[in-house]
Length: 474
Ligand code: JFZ
Figure 1 (cartoon, helix red, strand yellow):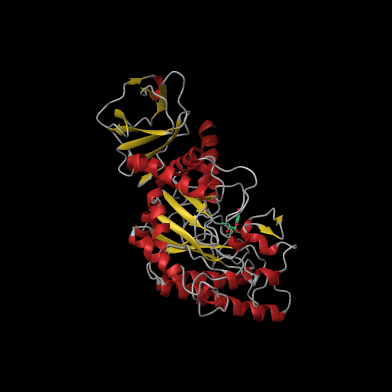
Figure 2: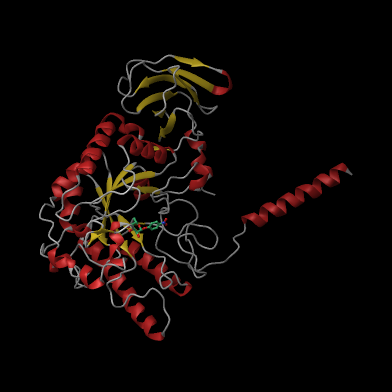
């Protein structure tokens, strides 16, 4: 009797399991891959650790103000403010003249900060193109500046070893063919022209700037773009772009499936190569990342990405930003810090200072950020940790120093700790005292710390092959 019951129970469990394995919807234009990409280009992306975002465009001229009044939304959205006539905004380009834009200086600043990739707005929602697009009249060539900005930027960043990605808004407030919603047959005709325009511009960008590694897409919330009928187009365009640029990395804020699901398809699988949804927010734990590739794009201020003359609200300190970077990397994400240059092409002093301070920290501690990954540990009281790809060095990024001067580190059972040392003094071992339940108590040098610091643990018996991230693929 008992055996029979067990068999029935087992069968029941099997059926439940088998059911859960089934995709509920068969999709032609959903995700074409389950889990992460495994190729070298994507591994390269995964290892960046730290990136820079740049929002630069006509909105920088207003800096969030018009007629002496401050717009309360994000400064790059000011064109949508009902107090500002579109015609006024759409004439700003005539005066656009970033005379102090110096590609080499921008690149040097990003390099010193420790950024390994940059994403720059080629065309934000306002439709103004920072490159000489032959498919638009509304480009930097028509401005007082009169020449390309993206080309020199790509060249300068590449020269110092920083990869370039292009932000591109799928919606375009300036284009006469763009529609928020397709209500009439004429709307559909116009929007079809718009889609050709998008394809042409993306192709043009890849052709003009052949070293560009990928796209960061934006603005896919419109009813027009996100319509189920747009699924075949977004699908085929992504495939087309990858054909003309093998290895291209396309962000996951772009496609729609035939059921109208954006970014994640109807079965919950990510369309695109990495999740773009962690914007100004950080996953609370590893489970929340779903084991995906992702990056977190963060602003200095509380809202807004473009230059803002007056900051409303909180401005993040360098320590806060370092903590966000540590947390993102400990959860297997890249951290990307946004800059909003002034209209003349120079950076505000607060951004310059923060970039330098982050860079100073990175100079000493970058091994904890570059080429590391999620190490399978839960969040611990003292801070955040990463591990080298070979599983031999765990990096403890310490943000909270207990009054005892000793931190308790819980390693994985399979991880035997060899020695512990400050990253800045590898020759000096720190005392380790093993405790119950797999904890190790490490005595940290007693001194006043003005910044978070990194302790390295040499792992003697690693278990890099059975890591959580591999499990999370399924
Ligand atoms: C978008 C833009 O509208 C904004 O101006 C800026 O460029 C930013 C990087 O991207 O804003 C968004 C888009 C999506 C979310 C939040 C802000 N989101 O999914 O949470």
